[in-house]
Image (cartoon, rainbow, N blue to C red):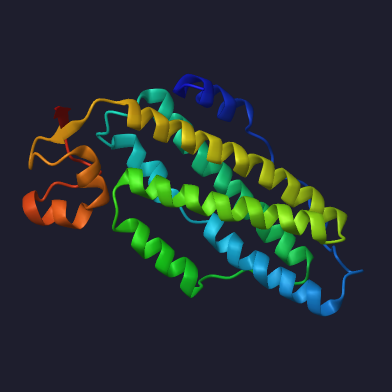
Length: 213
């Protein structure tokens, strides 16, 4: 699928948050219900991050981004926020509480913010892989219709997110190489070695200007 097809997909896939009962999972073992709520709360915190990417992609000077791609990425981030709201409702329905911070989410966010836009997207793709496996496993193993229904929907959309990411990476690899006009590094070098790029020429992977090699 090209960028316009992905833009159409995300446009059509906008939906209201899924309905989640105020209380669910009461038939589960109390210890399992408590641990399930805590585990989902950690994933919920991760799903709630990523808002900065939606802002950065608006002005990113990346030759791989056309208008449809930028809008598709913004819709993608909005879907992640919707998943976060649905997971938060599920955590509360299971008798748990949402988290405001966790060391794993904090470090993941700090590392991601040190990198360029392309690498941020790649780290999100890695998180999608983990999320798809996690949500699918819980959907199959937890005997609660609300958990099953909610996580089945999220896992299906996360799978589409991963397909979208793969499509974007293929498009980047097919592009002819480009070099930063400030430091003559390759575009990928400036993105994956952002700290070195800033030290050598003060160009940012987000704002650097690229010219054909």
